[in-house]
Image (cartoon, rainbow over all chains, first blue to last red; front, side, top):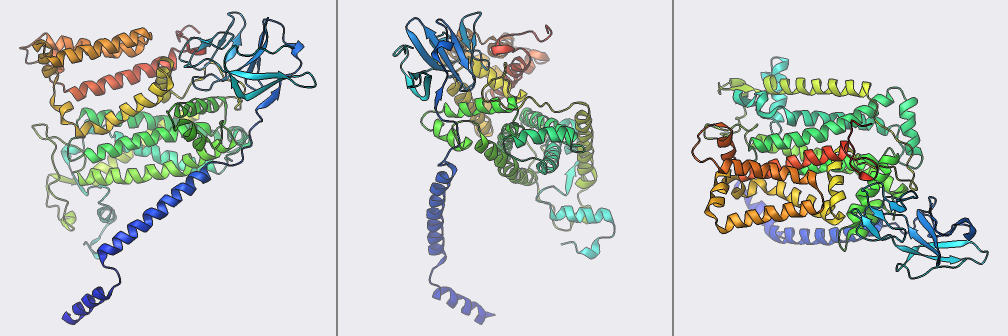
Amino acid sequence: MAEEREKRAADYDRAPLDRRQFVKVGTTSLGVAGLGACVFGFRYLSPNVLYEPPPIVSVGRPERYPVGSVTLDPRFGIFVARVQEGFYALSAVCTHLGCLSTWKADTGEIVCPCHGSTFRRDGTVTSGPAPEPLPWLKVWISDDGNLMVDRSATLPAHSEYVQA
Amino acid sequence: MPHATHIRNPLQAIAWWQHDFRRMLSARVREAQLGFRNTWYLGALTLGTFTIQVSTGLLLMLYYHPSIPQGYADMKDLEFVVSSGVMLRSLHRWSAHAMVFLVFMHMAKVFYRRAYQPPRELNWVVGVSLLLATLLLSYTGYLLPWDQLSYWGTTVGASIISSMPFVGARLRFYLLGGHTVNANALLRFYVLHTMIFPLVVIMLIAVHLWRLHKDGGMYEPDEQGKPILPDHIPAEDDLFRGVENEKTLSYRELLFREIIGIEALAVVLLSMALIWKAPLDEMANPLHTPNPAKAPWYFTGLQELLHYFPPFVAGIILPVLIVSGLFIIPFVPFFDDVSTADLCRWARDKSGRSITIATVMVVLSALLIRIHAWDALLPLWIVVTLLCLAGRTADQQKGFRNWVRSRSLSFWIMTLFLMEAVILTSVGTFFRGPSWTWVWPWRG
């Protein structure tokens, strides 16, 4: 019995690491590995290729939109508006929580169905929880005469009206 | 260790098995712990709904493909083609609602019995984590049918996340795997709903039951209202000697009653599933928001708050405050030690404290009036009225007013929270129509 205990103690002394060192080395290496795994994990979770629709869209001939109209293009989630000064486009995605707002012709305002925000036809908030106005989007006429909108390019309000 | 040869009948076999699992369930319980009125068996019933969720969920997974538009087509198949498919899906849906409801009830019951007192603080924290995990399970599961309601509910939820300063947009991108709710988002929510959160819940339930046993089984106060601590964990062979006369074998009494309770609940839920179909809207259409777009009922309270406050306040600050408030309840004796009578005494002292309380109340009321949040204001005023009512009587020993006076501060905080939750949820569910305007539900 005693011999065995001595033998075990001798084994312990000969061990390259004592317990404290083992725990230290172990936790450090685990920590480094865990940190690396986190970095790679985060990069893995962020897709490099997205199969989402392109931001630049054509909304058709300018003649479709009479002066004074606000038209929701439901395919792209944008409003195309035409006033005396020219054309402009607004994102229809409510700045509150991302619902798609609609144009109410009878009251002449833009309304969000989710939490009741209302906007003027130029995108400014008139009531409800929306924190910001609907952003203006870049509009131009393409070479073949179609009205184009870039949904990823926002402009300051009233900064640009496009002539047909 | 009771040897296998000691086992003479099936009941002893159960007792032995249970003894080995005694880290989950006490072998013996006191009669006083068993009463229905103590717990209403809410914990066991919640566990029952979770069991139903796991079993129906596993079966539903056999027919569900997390892809667009196949996921929605599978919902239709479950409804019209798969044998018993509509029943399984409805059972999964109603049982999910029941689970959320029961978790809330369980929390309220534990709170009002003050069963969170030491040594049970850790188990209270585990319980609140289970509440959060249950809500996350519901939220992730809500997207899977890929119908209009789930699509827009998830869009709104994801926008709340992106309203966090600095990291919000990034976090949303990681959660959805894209800029909008799309195929990646569906797959990610599927993995979260069917793998990650169920595993988290199962582990938390194990810890919850283990702690319950270690802390002396079901909460039972002594005459002074202090919790009875576990005297000792029954020694290995006490089990068959019956040394503790006041204790009864728990499988025979407790487990039996709880299983009866779970079975009764299962019958109710199954009947509901056979009578009412789980709703399925049109297929998700990113280009048309339904009006009104409502969250499931347990989130309509939050949606109502989102109507009044900016998303960062209603979606992040308030929930974080509420959840951390729930977490710290057992660790801040101040909430329990201060009673309504103390509050009233401070108010009469015209001390700095009374001015602070009055100022907070006035500012809160003014803010809520300014944004026309009358439904959020109502519970606050009810509680304040009750407190003032209690302050006007000093000498009564019995009756309602005295009952009010003897409540603690933590009682009022929790009561206010529950009243707000109930009122905001009912208003959001029943009184909100198109564009979130006020409607009377009985007028068409």
